[in-house]
Image (tube, rainbow, N blue to C red; front, side, top):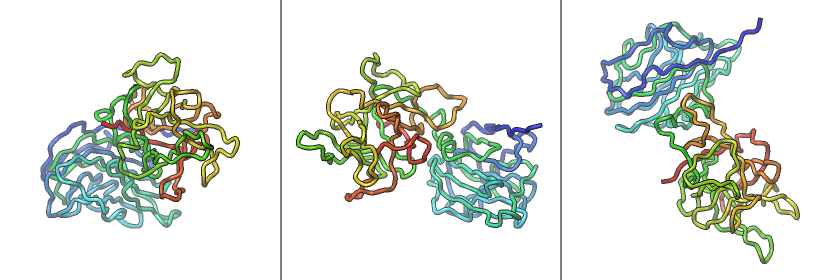
Length: 373
């Protein structure tokens, strides 16, 4: 008889609720999703002031040396201290992250732990912030426990002075995309509609889809400009796009954008369309020799159409439409849906090469779409 793992999760605190150093919330083991060999916890946290000793955010266990999982804040500066118990040591994991929580600011924290994958990962505000790997993979194991989960004060340590909300407990190891989806939750998610001003951030490198006004060498009548990725801070002159419908579709500005739909993008500053074409006559990117992506003047045409797909998982609040923060792939419709692509290959001016390449399965094909105010 075959057995299948069932993914379950629970929101333990919706909130937000205020907490002091002596406050705690306790959740019985039997009331949590059943964990076999992996788990994740996500939450939102606002610290009002630092405590001079270790402060517990959460701790599952019955005593100090039983601590799978646990996150504490370091004394005086509130850096994340993420640990667990192993069969070779009661207190192993990440000692202290470089990132320090900013006082009176909401932060999103994700803790993911897997014994089969032998690793602990920590994410802060949707970004990977640190990890710990078990080296002796054949003998060393994570020790899970059936103790209660404490939020705030636990065992010998005080809790925190601040606010907490959206505490979620999962019985699987969240992927980076799932962490990002949790970071941009239903309260922050806003619909992206036709006419929205957006930016596209390359997920692997964090750089914005952009242009520098450099022309591809197509001859004296060249009117197409090179698309690049450039910088991890938005350039409102070069990195902003307007989402538009394709010709003949009867789209009205303000209509929601359905997933798995054909759409277009106009560069806000130039009014040119995001475009690609075949590789005939040597029309390839300078370094990787892949399919070019350009800006083209004029109204949207068949070479300016892109199929949009979403990678982040379906959730209970999914509308079936494109939302702010979605992780997406864009596939050029005319050239057999080749996927928009970038990588850490740099051009001579230090910008990052952009092309169409692959079937969308690589991390280099993934982009985060964000509304621009």
